[in-house]
Length: 301
Image 1: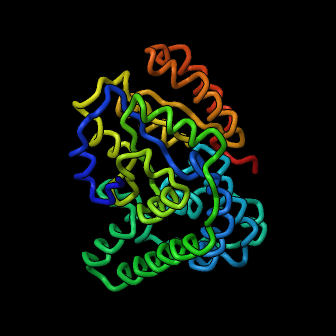
Image 2: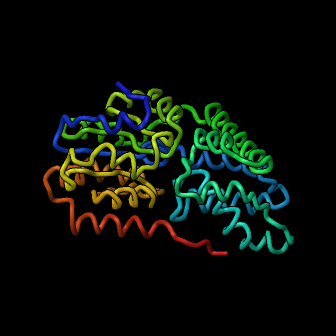
């Protein structure tokens, strides 16, 4: 039974097993990263942020930031700010066109504020508390974009099943560990996708961006409830690993482009090492080093 509720649900989670596993969703369980970024996020980012004159460069920056770099899987707002302030201004096409990348100062300030809740609900709160017309109008424009992206995702991203070996892994995990979804995707989309493929029955809570960041999900769900060496986060992005390490727990990577092989290894080998107390140390270092090589920090341009 899925608990679609605020973060209190994570704090109230009571252990039923000695072990705990948190699992990311997009790009980790479902092969949905590419279609979401290319067909949903990118076209509307170009439209709402006024990037039409350098649309090709914007596409390249979006794909690098969200799929092929160390910010893969990051919160949508953090990624857009990275594109606007770092990647696009340095892109050769933007330089050759003499294009001035729009600033969106109020939006960037909101994203860079560590106290901001980087979700649609957080945007609404920021709009309500805005003290001047300019910032309010800009944030309303961003909210319109973010809601449009969610609408398009609900229309386009359908019938994408879990990667091979995921279903079998979930069935294996739930025998020995409590399991939750730990994602920066809006919860409504997560609930829909997991229910569509009948894998929601294998997890106790689906935690999306409305419940905070992934590190907060893990802290609320596990602190004081499980031994640290009995808690594992599974993810396909550096942010997933960062969330795990911020909580002093273990991390298992799903390598971008090799998801099927990663899940097979997890099912056949890695989970057994985790349950057997043989995952931490050299084994975890090996799989993380392998994962790190898949995602560069800077683009080649």
